[in-house]
Image (cartoon, rainbow, N blue to C red; front, side, top):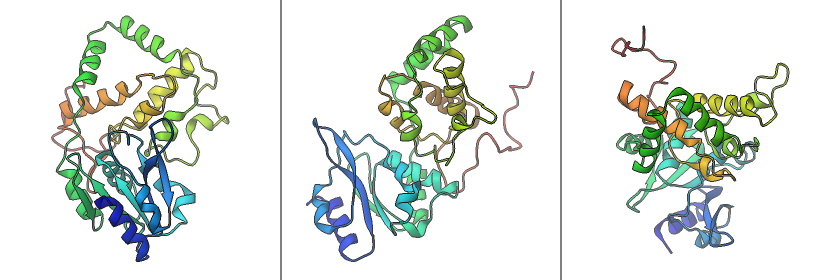
Length: 266
């Protein structure tokens, strides 16, 4: 057995964890999230480059919260998500065991959120070159060209909300898009409705997005709306020195420091 499989089996055998969340083989050579409670099932766990779903999304679900202590197989984006959710008081340290797998493949079992926070804080969110190039192309466009670019890209969106369902930070029990008294976001999939939905979602993720790409991976149409959140991450790095999830971190859009730049004031 791999090390993470052995750890998972041991946690279940000893009763330290009531359930393990991880990945296992699915159909068509793809992986799927898996939830199991028996030690012998740990041998079905897999972890490789196909494990792109951010399974931290399940930790805030009421069906999972009632299962007792949960162990989770966590990639770096999943670890960042857990710290961000903990900083927003959505996760309890007593309820979660993190079996982390670093980008180099090292397995780390974290004893509490402080140890996890220390590891996550030692890493930085870096936007891949291919996304940086596309963002730079968009930023060089005129306002009209940029409007037409996003109008064209978002025109295919039919508001299935798969992006919202895949995102650990979209944990509200009732989303703004589901409110109709008053109705904040138009329901029809037209230009105004699609712009309002994606801009609102991006703003709600400002200073919270861990750049896991789960939203874009979930989109059935391949719409590159993750460029919006990636651009904000780059902007925060330029204006505020960057963002990284932390238990002691400040929310970028609701916190003020005396040395914050004020060059945006005209």
